[in-house]
Length: 372
Image 1 (cartoon, one colour):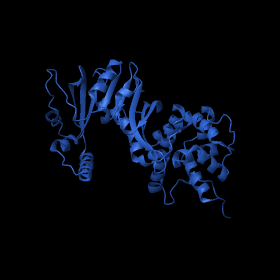
Image 2 (cartoon, rainbow, N blue to C red):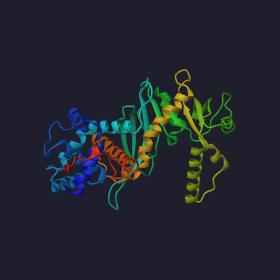
Image 3 (cartoon, rainbow, N blue to C red):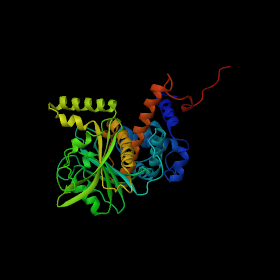
Image 4 (cartoon, rainbow, N blue to C red):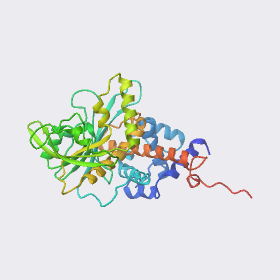
């Protein structure tokens, strides 16, 4: 057994139980067609997604390694068919790592919005921004858009996503724009979004809300507060709630280090108010309190943040691949494949550092022969 086969068997040992059966049930391998087994199907797909090879180069490498006899067109069709299968594998690994929905299933359709920048391989590869919506807790990608990284109409924006009546949108502070929030409300949706402290809030009399003064009323770690506030979204006035919690001292120290590092890198001076805002997690929501209390609002945002961390920890993995711009289905499958590579890498690091000195569980590799 060569080193590549040995490493691949370790990867197989980290996959969720019944991963091959799921491939058949999802329709990813209804017919093998050029592959000897499900094993080789996943191996070739992850080579394309994880290594950043084009479809044609992946097909050539797979043929040279003796894993498959397929063309680039066949491989593209296989990628499209694997969307549901790759999604299921990501769901299972997320739950295994502790990222799972706690409590009853959401009463609404919950969607986490985010974006990430990727680069095509090569010194002249183009930069692209993926804007995507993941439905939670199912982890279903229900909308995916591609734009250039630079130029007009390329930034993260709520207005580029379709919203249905009753949708609950979860988003980070990059999406905290009053006009976009007003657009979500016009379409009958609601939002939970991390507050950007630069966005002004107003009280019932349309006076500036004293944000910092109110936050100072939360003196201890875990102190929770909520206030009725308004945003000005163009000509519209959007009513909502500010829900905030004070961080632990450890979390505050981590935030201060991040601020100091950013300031040093860019040669800027940090305002005292910025350092003080970093002591809190602040979330704006349009949901009425009768439907969801402040603690539950923050719990929903926590779940969205856990999923984003999977991407943030291994951003380099998401930035080196060859983006399949053929159609939305293959792009979604590619995105799930990237997430799967990130989750497997994260699990491998965890096992290698804390499980055993040889770096994997004994069940992860084929059993050896016993010595008499």
